[in-house]
Length: 297
Image (cartoon, rainbow, N blue to C red; front, top):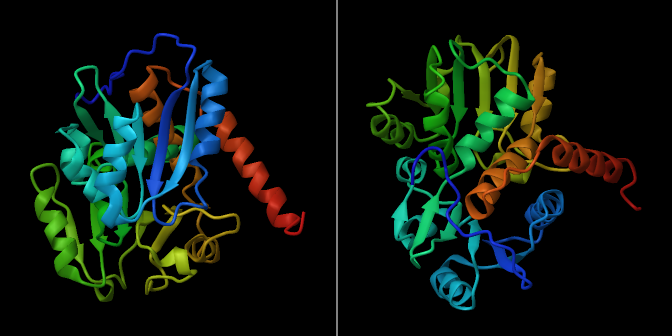
């Protein structure tokens, strides 16, 4: 699969809706069915998109059953992205680099193609929606798991001045840095090495926000007019978003925009149509703000 992410399926009209789904565990919080419903309405596509609770130990059986029953494509989220990477018959360049797949597509020849749209989703949100300048920027990524690996290549192709991965276990960060060394001299360190440094963009790729916690971040880490970006999203500001605001960030946001942008890339792979993302992001943001103001509504 090339970097242009050409559509992989025949999108000829049919009286029967094509079936797509997101697999994950847990999955009840997922906004993906709502997002893809909005995309389908916007682009006139006949499809059904559902969320299915799929633990890791049943992923292969569930994916086999989904495609055997006529399913056209899957999104895979925590904890299934590495399993989806192994499941795919062939991989895009992005998926191969990330060693994780969040989008599976049934090709015309029956093969299952795996892609990772997380990195391009983040990049589109940062550059198109938030107008963040990445060339020449000093970037810090917190965490050295699959989320970090999935976003690295698109960020490095923007030619930042530097990119550092900080992790509680420095060896895990170093392993990722070594993998991406041919693309860019990524630096790896532990959190204890961060005091005294500053960054234009800090990305939280840890799972800390899921439990409303923070990585151990020193004061002075964010450069003047810097940006904080949390890959997680929630109806209320995450602990990291709040930290960014308290530390003078010009912008401190969560990953709602990335969620919509990566979904749009998956939709394009499946349907050959590129939906407009700004109105969907705006709608979802307005809905969560209303829910936060009226929690009992």
